[in-house]
Image (cartoon, rainbow, N blue to C red):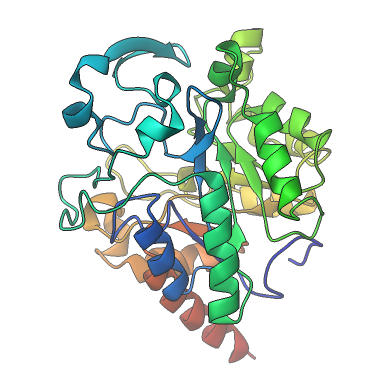
Length: 336
C-alpha cells in the first residue's frame, strides 16, 4: 500500500527499536549508530522529562533498570503512582538534566550482552536528532526519527507536559511537515489529538494487548479497549488525526494459550482501507520471544508480517530485519 507519508517507496521500513537494543543497551549513542549501520531507516527515541523540563531518551521514567542511578544516587529512591501503578524506583522527573548526565546506561535484560554497560550517557532528544542528521550525511540516505511520548498524562499531571517541548524541538529542527522524516507515536489517544493541532508531522497511534486501555481513556472513564479500537469504525476515527497505527504483533497474528499462533486477523487490511499505515512492534530474534511456529527462526516471523502487508517493523535487531526485507523484496520481484 502506498500512502503520502515519509518512507521508502514500495518497501516496508526498518525501525530501530530503541536503537539496536538486541545488541547494545537501549537508547544509547552506540546503539543508534549500530542500528543505522545495520540498515535502519528510522531510529526510535522514547521521551520522558527531567525535573527541569528537558526531554531525555529513556523507555520509562523509572530508570532503575537501564542506568546506574541506584549506585550513584541511592538515597533518591522513592515510590510513585504512574498510570495507575505503584512503582518503587528512581524517576527522571526527580533529577535535573545535569544530574542525568552523570549516569551511564546499562543493559536491561539479563540474558543480553552486558559488555557495554557503563559506557554511554543518557541522551537528550536534541542529541538524537543531531545524530540522525549527521548519519544521514555520512551514510548518504535520510535517517528518520520516531519519537514516542511516554506517560504523557502522568507528566502533564505533575506540571511537566511533553507535548509543547516536543513540538518546539521538532519545529526548530525542520520536522513540521507531513513529509518530514519523522513519526510521533503514543499509546494515548488524546495525546495524539492534541499534537495534531500543534504540528503537521505524521502521527502513529500505538496499540497494546486487546484487553488493555489507553490510560487517558482510564482517566476519562471511557470503556473502550485497544481491541475495540481495531474495529473498522474506530480505525476510521483514528485516521482523522493520525497517519498510522502501531499495533502489538499479537493484534495482527494472535497467539493461543500455548503460544502457538492463530490465524491472522484482518487488522492490516482494515487499517489500509481506512488510509492508515501499519507499524507493528516488537520483533526480537531470541527464541524466548518467538512463537513455536517459527522454529526459533526470526526470519520466518518477519517474512510472515511482510507478506501480510505491514508498512514497517519495530525491531531490536535491525540487521536481522534488513536481511528479511531483502529476502522479501527479492521474493516479491520474482513473483509472476
